[in-house]
Image (tube, rainbow, N blue to C red):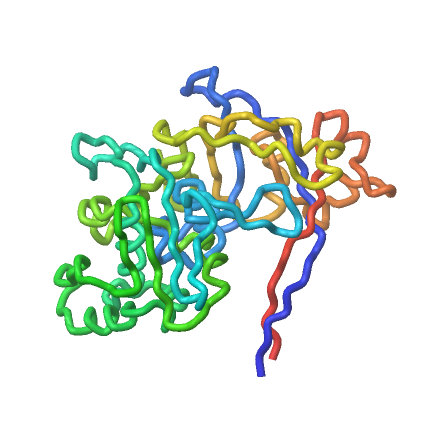
Length: 342
């Protein structure tokens, strides 16, 4: 018998301040340089199943809900939703209001290249797409036998010869949009965990225009509502994200845990997000090269490899004098990890 054990491990991260942009970019821009430990497989949220791709795509796409950045224990708060869901007494119907004035990033898939406003129907389209057997999503487990009529929609897609033959306008009883800003979900049976799953990246809304325009190549052309958009992707080498100019006004939280102020986590309270203009993510799959790049000032943050631990951390558990002289800061946090045992 298998069971899931969730444990917390201490993680160490050292951070150097973001410097100016490299040659060839606006000197007034702020660029965050990071390194990814694995290759990005694709940026289509409905089919993402690995952590590295999720890390990148979560800068481009958003969900109905998210976790508060600072509060512990983890607190679920609205992201694209206007509020927490209204739930019927029997626990079978969830009504969710969508924030107004949220726009997809500008992209050639839209008329005139201008991103349109997010609608409740974009969630329905995205979830039907996951149910589509022709799409072969890794994330059908989220909705399997949960929403009234969605399993029947999946069965219907099995009878379609081609992906292009699937009619996404086909009604699903458990996914209704009374207006552009209201999403009603009807469940087969009570599912209290649904709100947490609606903070999971694969449930992010997708614009049908993007899927129609890019087809199977949509995994290389993400179009979302998040703070960044994809500019360049040199597979196996680097990914460059730039600020989404259509991103709404969002601000860094002004409250968190009791000791967050002392730790410096509230220094940026109230600042408009995102606070950088550009993110350059290098693909560096081994720990020693990532550490070397950090020490050379090529990336702004890095985990501490075990072979370099004494170089970075002194006997009291703080940064060594060498690190402090370089204006490097240390962040220690508890990182949840999951292990399957059998």
